[in-house]
Length: 511
Image (cartoon, rainbow, N blue to C red; front, side, top):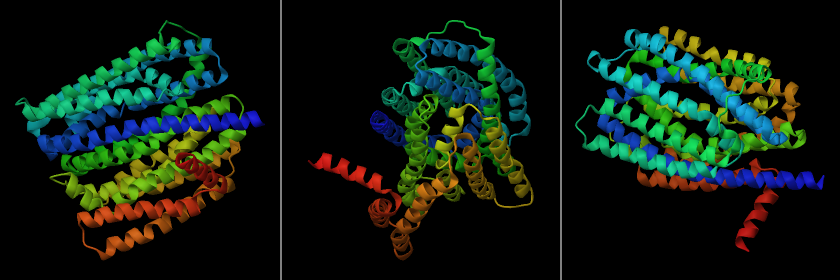
C-alpha cells in the first residue's frame, strides 16, 4: 500500500514537471502565434486571411483518418510501456507506420478528387482569388501529409513522457514562424501563395527534427516492415470506432467553418479563424496538462491500478477546468478591449465568436480526462457510437437554423448545448466501463467548480459594469480577478488533501 502511494506521488510529480515544461512551450508559442496572427492578418487582408483558413479547413476535413490513428498510436504505445513489453512495442510502431502509408494513399486520393471538386464548385471565394486558393489547397495537402507521417513519432514522445523535447522544438518553430512574418513583410510575391509555401517548409522541418530525435532516443522508432493479422485487426478495430468519433469532431469544427463560408462568405471565416486562434492559444494551458496526464491514465489501466486511475481522472477534470477558468475570466469580460489592443482591424463577429467558443471549450475541458479514460480501456465501440452520434447532430441542426435565417452565432449556441450533452453521456458510459460514479464526479468536480466560478466573477463583473473601458480597467480587472479566483478556488474548489498539499509546497518554497 505504501509503495502504491509513493508511486502515485512520484507519478504526480512527473506529471507536474511535464506540465511545467509544456507550459514553457505554450507561453512561447502563444506569444508568437498572437503576434504572427496580427501581422499576417494585416499583410494578407481580411478576405485573403479568411480564404487561407477555410481552404486549409477542407484538407483538415480529411484529418479524421490520421487523427484516429494518432489516438490509437498513443494508446497502444503507452499500454505496452505500462506492461513493459518492449518487443511488442517495436512491432506496434512498425505496424502503425504501415497503416499510415495506406491511410496516406486514401487521403491523397480523396483530397485530389472530392476535396478539389468541392473547393472549385461549392466554396464562396472571389473569382480573382481562385488561383491562389488552389495554390493554398495543394500546399495544405502536402503539409498535411508530412504532419500525418510524423504522428507516430509524436505519439512515441508522449507515451515516453519526454515533454522537454516539445519545449526545444517550439523554440525552433517559433523562430521559423517569425521568419515567415519578416519574409511576408519584405516580399513582393503574391503573399497568400507565399504564406502557404512557407508554412509547408516549416511543417516539414519540424516533422523531420521530431523523426530524427525519436530514431536516436527510442529503439522502437526504427521502422522495419512487420505484419501481424491479429495486431492489424486489433489496431483497426480500435481505430474504426475512433474514426467515427474523430469524424464527428472534425465535422463539428471544420464543418462549421465551411458552412459559415457558404452562408456568409470569407469575411466571417476570418473572424472564425481569429476566434479559434485565441481559443487555441488559451486552451493550450489545459491541453499541456492533459498531454502530461493521458499516458499515466493509460498506464494505470494497463497495470490494473484502478483506484489510482479514478483518482487521477477526478483531479485532472477539476484542475483542467480551473486552469482554463483563471485564464479566460479576463478575456471573456474584456474581449472587446483585448481585440482593440491586439488587432489594428477587428473583423465583424470576432468578439461574439470568441466568447461562445471559449465557453464551449470550458465545458469540454471537463471531458478531456474522461476521453483519455475511455481510450485507455480499448473498449470504445458503444462509447464512440453514442457520443459521436450526438456530436454529429450539431452540424445538421446548425444548417437547419441557418437556413431558417438565424444569425451566425447560433452555431456556437448549439455547440454549447452539444458539449453539455456529451459530457453527461461520457459520465454515464464510463460508469459501466471503469465504474466511475456520477455522484463522486458531481461532488468532487461539478460542485467545486460551479461555486468557484460563480463567486470568482462577482467582483470582476462589478468592476466591468461600473468603470469605462480602458487599459486601467483591463489591468485592474485582470489583477483583481486573479487574486479573487485563486482565493475562492482555494476555499471552495479544493479538497482538504489538496489544500494540505499546496500548503506543504509553499512551505518548502519559503523555507
